[in-house]
Amino acid sequence: MMGSLRRRLLAWLLAATVVLDLLALADTWREAAETATDLSDRVLAGSALAIAERVTVSEDTGLSVDIPYSALEMLTSTAQDRVFYRVDGPQGFITGYERLARAEPGADGKGFADSSFAGDPIRLITLARTATTGIGAVPFTVTVAESTLARRELTQAILLSSALRLLGMILGAAAIVWIAVPLALRPLNRLSEAIADRSPDDLSPIRAEVPTEVQGLVEAVNSLMLRLETALDALRNFTGNAGHQLRTPLAVIRTQLALAERSDTPDAARQATAKADAALADAERILAQLLLLARVDAAAGQSGAPVEVAALAREVTGEMIPRAAAAGIDLGFTGGPAFARAEPVLLAEALKNLIDNALAYAGTGTVVTVEVARGEQTVVLAVEDDGPGIPAAARARLTARFARGASGQAGLGLGLPIVAEIAALFGGQLLLVRGPQGKGLRAELYLPNAEIPA
Ligand SMILES: Nc1ncnc2c1ncn2[C@@H]1O[C@H](COP(=O)(O)OP(=O)(O)OP(=O)(O)O)[C@@H](O)[C@H]1O
Ligand SMILES: [Mg+2]
Image 1 (tube, protein in one colour):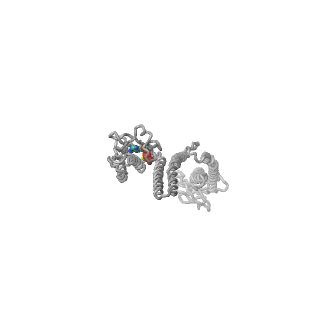
Image 2: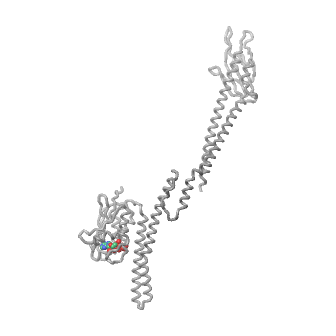
Image 3: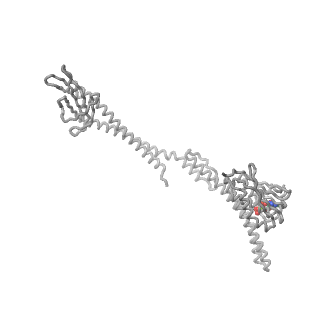
């Protein structure tokens, strides 16, 4: 369980906006402090200048100041802020607050500093000027300071109001997410309803309108449905065919076993069980073919990796030689390396079916040759015999499922159709032609030529 999307989105949104808002607040704080300092520095400079203008020199008394009340008046903007000043001449302190700190004036004759006085934080300016007399120039400094309580309160007020505004925005965004997520997810609910409402055997693709983000999911589900459908079809085919095809041999087995039980002589009993055994072998063969057919059905739509056909064919042929020898048939292999894109197990089964047929229908004393040849576009895997062959008219019909030849021999009629379907599965085809000497059968399995892997 991953928790709700709504909660996850909300957590992400809150985390991100809190971080961003803290950055914004820091910026606001810096800017508010700068603006306030800037403003009051200008007022400080103004009043320092006003005081400096009132500094006079007389030859006997030296420097004297007549502090204009208005110069300090302009500073006391708020009731709780206090204003201090001092004037210094070349001989040192002249008037004002002697314990007040001073700043170092710069090239423009002004210097600002942050300090404290009587326990309160202050901002101060020191202005350097000269007073001139007939004899010469006398340098002096004027320092004016103001406590910064009001300024701090102002920045704090600005900060608080922007923090409140940001908090409001965060809450608003959270509310939007809380409301919008279920709305945005509504198509998903419709989708799950559409899927839930389906009948169990409805594997048709989902057609519901979904947002692009969900499109991938729907496509994945649809392709799964398609594969399920193929697999289900294979299963349905198998169960249908198995039920139908196994009924006969099973009935024979039961009849023969009943006969064996009721027979008077051991000979008759043996005969009946031998027949039951043959029917059992039939059933086994039928099951094997049907299972193979089901595997072909289930493999629909898959393409294999390149397979070296000659090596595979040589191996399968080798496995069949003892059976061929027992049937008095000369089985051989010829051909060189050739690659085709196919599933090796299915391809081997196809070849086994073709050789099986040759061994079953060509007859004693015949020659059966397995051949692999590489063409421009195709690889041919052929099984050739010089037996009776199949009349041209019958050949086409035999690649249909459950079609039997006229020979009357045991067999289900699934061999050739399976081979044809395996060939089609890999993009090839099965051709039945007359043998090269005008007799027998040549079954040719064509497969698309695959590049020889490096
Ligand atoms: N090499 C062959 N020579 C002569 N007749 C053949 C040859 N191969 C196939 N046939 C004929 O074609 C028919 C269909 O063959 P197919 O392999 O499809 O089915 P089957 O051999 O009868 O049954 P299964 O292979 O399912 O056990 C056979 O019954 C047989 O009459
Ligand atoms: Mg066969």
